[in-house]
Length: 326
Image (tube, rainbow, N blue to C red; front, top):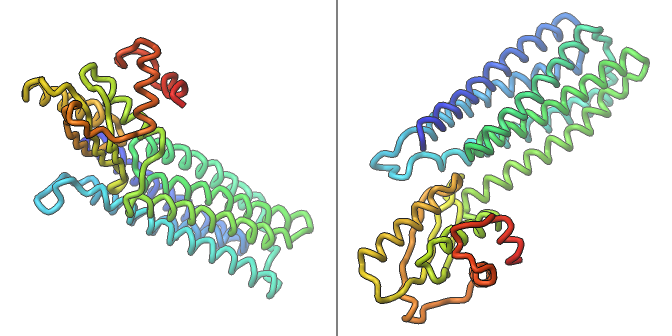
């Protein structure tokens, strides 16, 4: 992991923690002054956010440690576990919102008028959480950090919960207090779905699932771009933590020297490893005369497209060739 990525993901984790602590204090103060159930639930939600933001920050610190003897590939594989912890927090928040909404309806303990201060803090929360959502999502996707993507989805949830609390506060002010628990119950379903999204994505990282089809296409294209590569087969790409390991066989002319074959292998490895999603690359060089070729529909289509275009694969737009091959 590069020093730049370490610095960025740690900074984002610290910012998320600081913002959640600030929101918890603001909501807690309004709850103390007004006694609003909606604002109180939001204050508890922000305290929970702060707790697992601290866990995320600690987890990101561990994942950005350099490789050592026991972990020669680094510590990035811890990130999916950190994300699953976030998912537990999301499920707990959803359950808490649903429980509070249900008990409020059963006991009739809803509809306290909280005034303009509560409206202001809830609107401010929604705006702040939207900013955090966009920030965490952008950095998480750019840096391939599942923990930051999970944090982004959790911040998206908080926009919904703040909106539900705002509906409740306004409903109480305009004579429809039942809107408070109803809106909260609806939002809890969205929170549960976000927890499911986080679990689904990170379980794929842990069980070594295949990456998206587009990534496999680009791996094959990068291998075939080398002018001495005549074909590719046995292409295996799978997640190891949040990053992708690649194994690929390439076909070359059998009469070249070992030095020449080694240079081709090194060039293909460097090209594929330059992809930001990829960690390790293993390239096996086959003399094409041995007949070890195995059918690979994607590689065959790309080779046919290059041949039809009269292109050796070094020039041209990848996306355009991919569409032609399809």
